[in-house]
Image 1 (cartoon, one colour):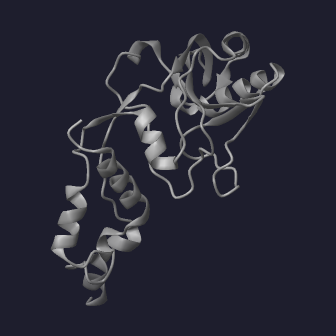
Image 2 (cartoon, one colour):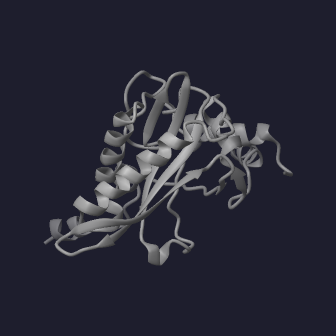
Length: 233
């Protein structure tokens, strides 16, 4: 890779900690962008996680593989029989996650919303579930998908830097995916599943600049408005 890991770490730290508006000179801003990876660059998860959190992605060699296989099968059978209620397939994920957590616990794992580095449990952001058994730590992302678009280029996996990462140790990174089919009356049933080892998943880098309504609708931004027009009537 033509850009160093240091540049990547600088970028991640910058996103977490620096307000671009606080950079007072063009030179400072330019130097910041010089240390960033090009947008669209592919970076494997095993490199992203250590840069973001300080913890390594372990190579999974089938640890607890039989147990995970049974958990996935039991979750699938329950979702196929009982289904979940949701307006759209991507809204069913939370219910699927809860069923999966129940099956993990039944199989002897401890499983819960991850405890962030601050000591608080956080549901938002990667990963969805922290799974432990003995001294082994697994980070599990949960996804639902439709068989019709499983090969599409739609972005479905997101990972953003955080000041309070949900990853607190070296661990295995897996993804549990369940295909769902609409059965009417906002009910979805499972039609299949996949367990993925995502250590080598290459993620595309996407930059985004954003502003809130508070930032946008300030008096010094307004050229004219309906409020001004009505005040003169």
